[in-house]
Image (cartoon, rainbow, N blue to C red; front, side, top):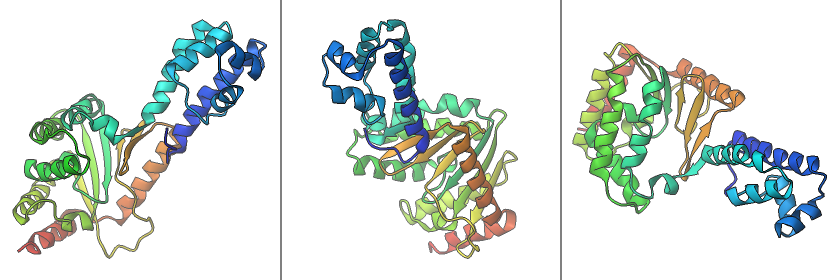
Length: 282
């Protein structure tokens, strides 16, 4: 497994490793005893106990069986799978195409009341037009050599975005000014997208801020991240999606969002930046 950029992932894996060690010690077994019983090299026991190697489901079952603690295996397997799900490579999420990934987020979007989104590279998915989404998802599909279900994925993304117009939700969205200038698709696609940003600013549930190029930076630019209430942060890397649930780390993303909010402009000042970006397309 790759090393996660988020310490919460490693902390979760260490918690599983420590529980394995406790089970072995409670059984009165040495590492050599357990390895012999499970038919492993002793070094494997050390790697598992020190969270160097994430355990497979079979490893956990064999460990618990050797320690006479078969009843502990289900909970440990669930904890291990949860740790693994914090850092998931895009190829695992997208190997069958992009549509299912769009659909998989619907329950999370529907139960979240307060969305906070910071985007440093593209327009937030919740605010994308179908043409912009088609250009972006097409680019992702081509880059990652995915099965081409772009049209279905675009439709799913548009359906997912209905939360902006339905239900009891609030949206605070921040984009760097560069997002307005990065051309995704043709000039016509960008003009339509930027025009939609102007219109969506009138939605009572939406607060859209733009961080100007000229802002006196007190917070450096980060990777795109989304906060779902105050419970979870989702961070998008080139190779993987990181889900952060540790309260201390979610707190850092909330703090970063707050700092970005202070750098952004809103209302007429934001509309002026968007309008300027539209004019630059001509």
